[in-house]
Image (cartoon, rainbow over all chains, first blue to last red):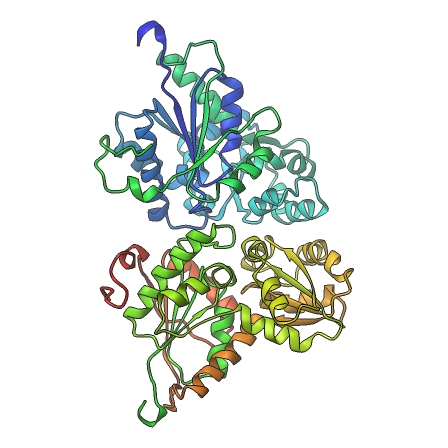
Length: 287
Length: 287
């Protein structure tokens, strides 16, 4: 790449707004990068869907992102990273695709001292056992304790970040994990970073929280550096947003996830069905 | 119909398991009827989707039900009844299609004494204002107070029917309605009948709860009677279940909704896309 300069955008996708926690970390760490964000709001939530369904939806999204000439894809959704990443990497061998699981797993293993690690996430993520499998594949000596927390996503989307109800629910979910004497807890869902303060209050202070959004953004930076494919332009990158349903609702929730620093322009609605059957790499681009 | 005898099934659909509260009431009231239940689990929840999306999904389901030769359709989903029923009735003029809104509205108006009525439901149902519009169209003198309660569906699906958390959430949602001095509260979501006892404890005893599942089952019975199209066979009707994703999860949750009395056999997975483009009434039947 001429002058190590690759202005092509990075694609990030999630089942909805949740992946914006990852986008936010990437914006901060790599401010010059152009980003295309896709929220598959017509099919949210992925957490309760079958692996086959999540894989097929994810594939359509990657097809769409290819029409936008992305240089890499970040699967910001934990469920899709759990159940679809391997297949996507096989389907698109020329495209670097990074999920949110592996970076968090590596960070957790570097963090733990007593080798007792907790994982919380949606039903789909936890049932897939992906975090557990990855953790054990790197270190057979760790003990992994998992807990699906299906109420936390709606709690965040209700804006109940610091409410009595939230603390009650967190106690309900986390007490059994704390009792297992874990010293590290992986927040295995895009929404959970917004509850970080509340979670830290409920679990003891000696438990370190692993935020997969942060971990993956570091991984993206490392990948771009080592492949000399950063966007070296000094100006601020462009951030574009696409959803498959309800753009207004997305925009409203996005404010909660991105904070006041990021202004969201137009959120464009797309139909994934347009990206199903056309051959990979030759996907029609209506936009 | 010969001997007033119409063994064709009744179709019932919802975005997921929730409509089983309606199915359960219909099983009880009309035990001889054959029922085809469709849960669109690939696209749940409808509550947060756009009206266009909910309408198009609902239309595919009615197309599917037509391949099963149904004599009528019950839209057991509040969101679909709110935003898609009119259009469905236009699209399928030969087919009686009953939603859950109108029966509940009528019952609420018969019940209220002080003409102050509360409505709770998903975001989609409440935003559509359908309950309010219907209530006012029958009686301009009523005051209607609405509240979306997006946490209640996941609370039910977590099985937290009688938990401390549930009471906290119900207080959070319902206190403002109680303070409006309502005497009647419409449970405008299929899942809420499972929380009836908890809701009754949280609101004062003098508030009457209107269960739309019960109301619609009475309407179905009345329609069949007045059109002489009951299934007069004395044996127990057959109940068949179709979902668009994750049949095992449906089966598991269905037990919560149907109680021990109902045995669920095979839950078959269908793909709605097969029922999109073929002309109405000539939908292909792969089954």
